[in-house]
Image (cartoon, rainbow, N blue to C red; front, side):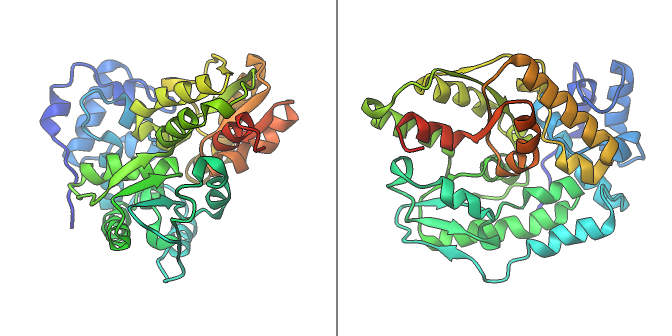
Length: 337
């Protein structure tokens, strides 16, 4: 079984335990944060193992790249600490089990990954994706297993991820364009954290869209609208890609409004928090987030993750904000939507 590449000496010598100091759901002073993280490193009991809501943020906050979130998941599983009710945990494991019911298109040197989300296939269409849309892969056999980190089932991640990577390799593609933010995060953060080789080049769909919009620049009609952005939890695994969003919006004439819960301070959609921390915590997160969007005065709320979009669309609509996926916003700019 693959082992997490975590060095407790790095935590011991850390000049500032930002992983816990910056946490939006637990409160520690510097000394407490350091001591509690060292308890986690040593495999001892810590309130962190009970209170973590699995928002992924500590992976971004850790300046040492020492993977605190994955370690917390490992320790929880070792101690049998469930993050959600056992039926919910088992439901996610069972409904994402590989059953040979996948779909693939005419794959050549590139493949468009739709993960386990059929809606991504519809998004990955039109002029922006005309070169790769026929070469798609969809199904549990190609699903990034990162969702199981929310349930502290790191063993499921380590078991399934190598199979997913092998399934992509069997398609013969040298590049995988990831339409799901979490897939790209899995291939470029989780896989190397566990020493799992990725036999292809993962391509972030926003990078792909930047190149496609540059190729179609004569067809772009600036939208001249203001938006807020719902940053998904998985984007915490790839914080270096957040600036790509601004580059993409600049190309289509869209203004990203500043607000409190943005960037490093972002709040997730709250639905996983509902499963692992209860309705009261989830409702609070969602209300603060949506109220913040409304205060910014945006016309649109731009989504990256389809799960975030299905969770928050009705709430933002009630605030007079139009929900839209980033890909559809780009399609609007070239007159396709």
